Length: 220
Image 1: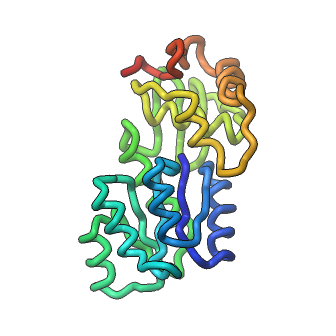
Image 2 (image 1 turned 90 degrees about the vertical axis):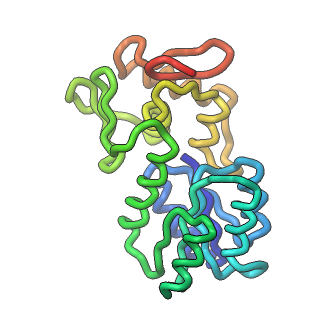
Image 3 (image 1 turned 90 degrees about the horizontal axis):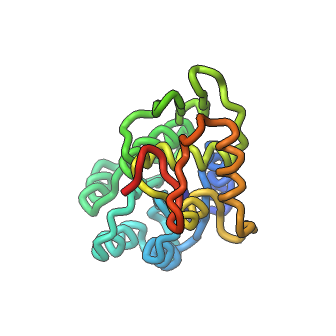
């Protein structure tokens, strides 16, 4: 899952990036509204964390332009403006959630998990499919109640597939969830992660749809 942080406070943005990476997200950062709109238009992110106090335009205008383009990407407003009217304006313009600064990172992560579940096929933090269990809150996975030792990228691939059970995920889709801008990606990176996962998961759990991608539990 790739998060776009729209924030002109570099120190805060970098801290958020580090925290989000530790939570298993790929996190990119832009510092103004124009770049945020472009990133959304070019499908470079799955969820937007949007500050309102941007240098080139108000964050609410960014949100308005995103919604006027008929884009329903989840947007979480993160701002020091915590008046009731500000919250109402943001929600009326199409924000999915609103979190006032200062905030507890654990609350932000919980709110992101809610938005993330809306994008997938499941509505719970614990996903169980064919003996494989994934707890997205605790970042734990198991097979028949036996703990799985996964690398960060392996966990992210498994999470993307299980949250979209029944949907085919292309290599490009998986790469977009795993890697940040500028991060070097080997041409066979996804295939390597899938190969390692298959050694740890039940036979046939991850299915290859030749020429398209990978899926769990069928594909459509």
